Amino acid sequence: MHDRTEDVFTEERPWGDFRSFCTNETVTVKVITVRPGQRLSLQKHAHRAELWTVLDEAPMEVTVNDRTWRAGKDEQIWVPQGAVHRMANPGTATARILEVGFGHFDEDDIVRLEDDYQRS
Image (tube, rainbow, N blue to C red; front, side, top):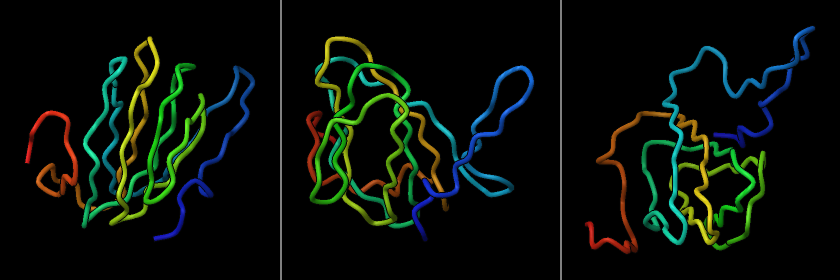
């Protein structure tokens, strides 16, 4: 599956604009909220890829495979199917990411490689 950040577009209207992330596809959409000092498990999925968009000014630390960086507001991150990934909030304010999952969604598809909360 190709990098879906290339498909995102903004459409101008008289009242403002909208941003489209996908059209006429089977997807799962979530807003993930990460409290200050917390992080999700280091994980991967066999059956879906994800497109993340950072929603807040608070920086979100993201890892995709061997790269880790601080992603700023409105930054889009492509997480390919099978990629090792994680998001963390190193800041002092709550941070959110819009997640669009492409492919079959099932919470049982999470393979946790590291987890701060001792989940398997």
